[in-house]
Image (cartoon, rainbow, N blue to C red):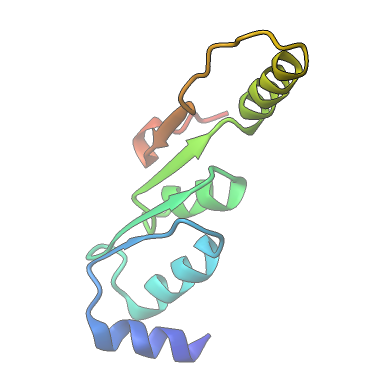
Length: 105
């Protein structure tokens, strides 16, 4: 973990948008560099891990989608296609989660 932290500090990164996995590793690098308050960090997929990273202030936002709804819509489209029934398609439903809008539950 020390090598990525060194590279991170040398490049003076001011914002990170992670579109894949690795939010926890990036959060560790940001924390190790001591720049949690300086770097804007946006990730994907709201999980218990990203929830904790948001609450401690290391991550600024998470772009999340409801996988269950997406799976349901894919199945609906596949069934309609097999039955040769036209079906309206919808844009993916996304939400942006900030520290301030995480419920206490």
